[in-house]
Length: 226
Image (cartoon, rainbow, N blue to C red; front, side):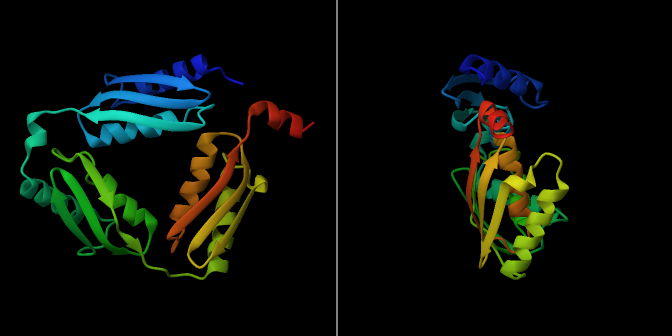
């Protein structure tokens, strides 16, 4: 099992490896596998990138972040100007249905509302605007319009697990009730857990996910295969 110091070093190396984070002022501390990120970045997108980078490191059990978005002239941008930029970004994104999302901006915080068919469309709306000047946070309240049956959803998700080399599909059970998916079982890493969850969210019609996946320690995994 990796020590906290080893995890800390790996997280710091991962942050430096990331093309938009190599010069970021982010401090990393680890206690019993729980990683805490502190520091300052200049955009909301870089803050999210730091969180995602830390989650990918083997041995990370949980993540807490206290990253602040730095104060600069860009963050004094008028809310009206930010709203126009957001609408423009959404309009020109080919993966987002036109006129399906309503936008409100207050003190640099962007609120998105509306309805789409896929979670990937919902997520695309957030990623399309997270690097815009002046955006401090994004509250995504876009809902997903159901389109397929629960049985079909469970089957499609299970088939997607089998296609992924990074996922041990035999150790994960998926069930669907209505438009809520539930995952149970054990995975080898936080990254595998996150990938399995991402697959569920990519399924058409999924509106909620209850992930009960357990990240198993490497030593326990070896014992279970002996």
